Length: 73
Image 1 (cartoon, one colour):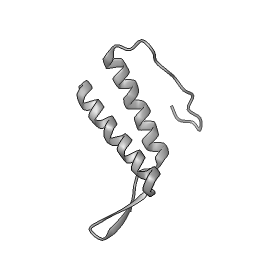
Image 2 (tube, rainbow, N blue to C red):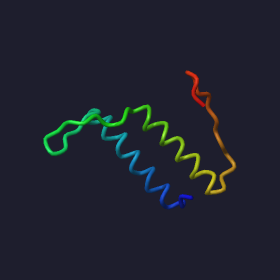
Image 3 (cartoon, helix red, strand yellow):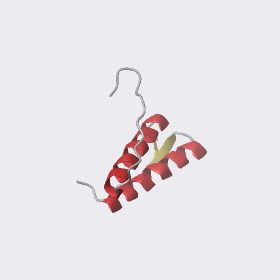
Image 4 (cartoon, rainbow, N blue to C red):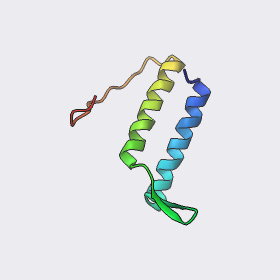
């Protein structure tokens, strides 16, 4: 099971990647090759999931649920 600290570190990485995509675009170059970064909606979904896990581990009593459309969930 992930610790609260590791979840916060992971959340910070996802937020940094989201910010990078929003400011520079979705592709990046590594060793001369261009690769596509994860789609923004995927990153936002992961951020929401990590935030929910942090809330549970922190003992937060406020939980938000949202509907997933398109047959997921």
